[in-house]
Image 1 (cartoon, one colour):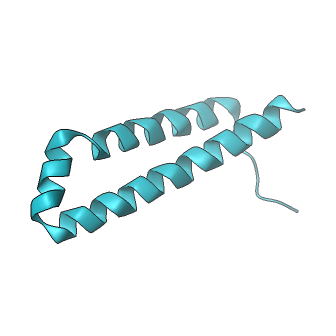
Image 2: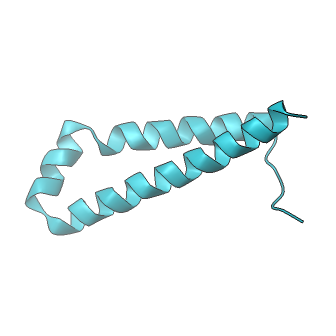
Image 3: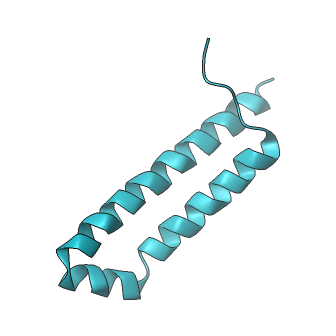
Amino acid sequence: MGTPLLSARRSLTLAAIAVILEILLVMPFVDSAADGNSTVHFTQHGGIFLGGLLMGIALRDMYVMSRR
């Protein structure tokens, strides 16, 4: 038994949140703050990883729902 799927609306919302997170984390003001502080730098990496993970979950659920 696999993980339960998100509804279509929740998958789309999760994908939108992930895209916004990824865009915010590569903005110049975050990038320049990450250049000067290693904590912000590694937090930026963690946030980018989290955004990719959320995007993967959303895309997986949307793909599976499209195949039904």
